[in-house]
Image (cartoon, rainbow over the protein chains, first blue to last red):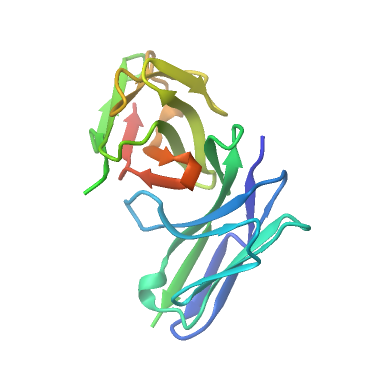
Length: 111
Length: 112
């Protein structure tokens, strides 16, 4: 089955710094989802990038997708304390009928 | 507001006992899912359903059953709970055509 895999399982940064996390996936997908999960909550979609897009921006978030290397990245510009969360990439599996998640990257932003 | 609601929010179960986790969605989505989350493993797919009265196995279905009695409701059943099933369980619904997924807040299950 297809699965995403984040590199760098935990990142600790200070407010104002930029941070990038990467995700590689093993089989073809038409879309990469990026979710954030706050403590005690379910995952929430923060950005979705499709195979015909190389880059997608949403506020301070920037996602990239390289279908040739089957990898995606998520960057946060000028991180704030409220960006502290676990970030997951997810791709389609089960014939596009379900999401398969990577193991996640914990981002901790300190003042 | 469209939502996915899980119950209970947390549960303590005895080894060998039966556990039922419930999920209700108001998104009018065809697809519903059960995932489990363990530390260091992200979310893993247990079962899913794309129509009432039908369920499909995900990646880790062993020890779990699922039931979809209506479009809005999807249950996860542990007939004989085991210690290894201690985890946080998430339900989700989706409009797969638009890659639109909504997750519930999770059920924290502790099997003792």
